[in-house]
Image (cartoon, rainbow, N blue to C red; front, top):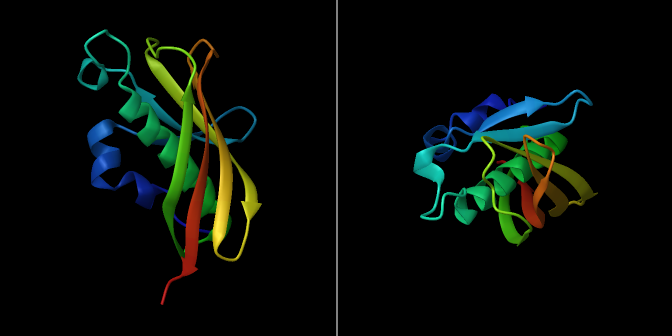
Length: 131
């Protein structure tokens, strides 16, 4: 099992305030507060921040599934934005669809604190043994 806190120690994670958590159903997720510094000019969270949170949630489930003996990196990310993110809390959950020898595929849901679906996505990660 990989130490998921290692992901949170990354500079981008710290800068944006991304935090790993488990919900009541024990699903791993990523939380980010919708603070002024992360909003675009119209007041909603910037789409790039949502994309980063989606990518981070996939990183969590991929790293959790493969463990510390593997390195993982994003090779493809597709997002459909459904609503503007104006709530204070963005919660992102990824589900591993395929765990292959070299590629992992996950689907993602980004919801706000009111449980509204903000965005959906799909990501492909390349995984390879370390060393």
